[in-house]
Length: 78
Image (cartoon, rainbow, N blue to C red; front, side, top):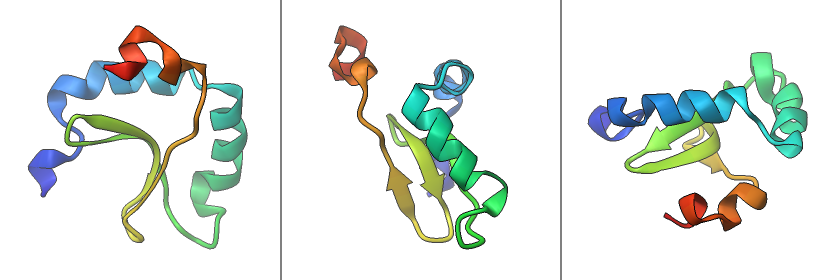
């Protein structure tokens, strides 16, 4: 399954998304970073196949996606 996660061709987009978080992503990341949420490690802007999720916990196989204005653009729909 490793070849499906964090595909190299999505690296630049993932980096751009990490460097320009929404206010909601900033707030949630403060609560999740450094394993603050019940000791679980979360990753930001993790890709699964051709999708990029806002946060992902490998241990729990849990993806968290926050809605925001970026989802309602032409690029977001794509």
